[in-house]
Image (cartoon, rainbow, N blue to C red):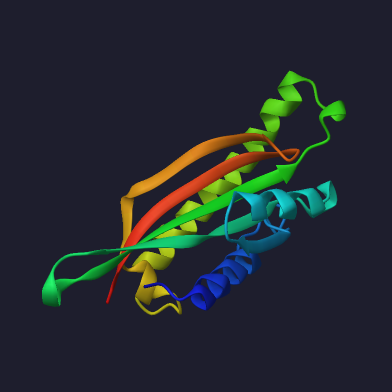
Length: 159
């Protein structure tokens, strides 16, 4: 079972390391929530100047296997969102929010896969179990004035 502190450390590391083409941080705010009600509260408190947010949802865990070959399936979700002032955007501007946050979602996924293959890295232990086929990216719109992407993924850890 993935330790929550380990996930929080990884989130902080990702936010510190991922930079855009101008050398600025891709993510200016990160946090962990428990569920959608926590997400709503957190997003209401954010401001556009803090864009872009990387928000982890506390994982779900499921035991799989039998007897001495059991594993934990860790089911994770991340939100990559920008707070949006809708009065400042026409339709094309609104779509551009998704274009920009999609670049950040892809960079986040690329980082996960790179860290999985880095056997000497700090986070290689839990990412070595990442199931790339489980990665799913879905658009999120008008969620407490935020728009962007939800990244879902699974990986197993030994019991």
